[in-house]
Image (cartoon, rainbow, N blue to C red; front, side, top):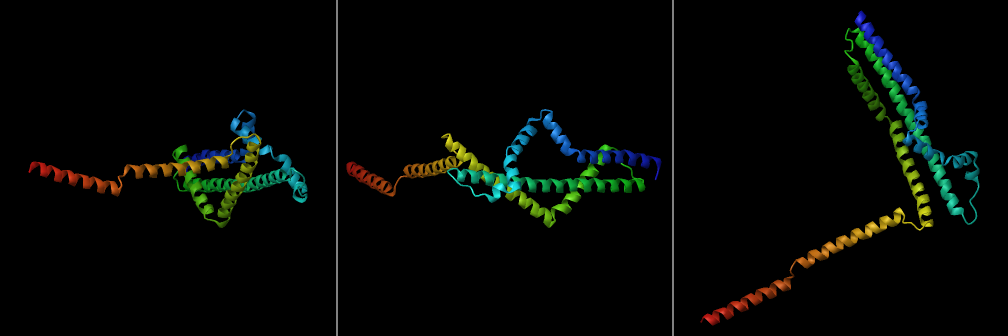
Amino acid sequence: MTDAGEQNEEWAQAWIDEQREKLKNSADEGRQSTEDGDFSGLWARLGSEWLSGFEKLLRTGFLGSAIPLGWGREREQEWRDLALAQAQYRQVEADLLAKLMTIQTQALDRLERAVRARAQENRPLSDIRELYELWIDCGEEVYAEVARSEDYCRLQAAVGNASVRLRANQQKILERGLKYFDLPTRSELNSVHRELRALREELAELRAAHSRPSRRAKHSKGVDSRVRARAARKVRK
């Protein structure tokens, strides 16, 4: 290995170590961005904390064991279902993020081996762009291997199912609140949209039928033209 190859491997290794450090501190950086005024992170944190009380009760087993009673039992059950769906979604989301972090780690490991192999072959990287492109290639190779695995497919399906359940429970809570304030709900608006679409289709059919002359009108028009033709011939005679 030449001196140029050793220097190339050193700055490439420094970049790889920097990416690994960023990957380890990604969670801390996300929390810091929220404190620094990142409103998207702020709303995400608020949305994740509003069910913390119910999740704690779920973990203690109180909500799971006690049967909801009283005039508000339906509402209480809806909130229980929402808290449970939120907890399940958080779990599968954390599993998916952990899997993605593993993909990034494996991509950096593969990149490190590729850089060392090129240095030993006296084919050093020319610039940071070539290193970045090699990193992308390594990431795509690792993701292609992981994406074909059965565990990853099951994890993706679990995330999709959990998100659908969470959205359904959120929709149920929101619709109850909107009805309480006498506001239209999404279900009611969807019903209105379907009825309006059906009325538009029916109106279009009526207009099309009205614009087309009927067969009887065509026949009577032909008879009148023949009668006028005979009368004109008699007058000429």
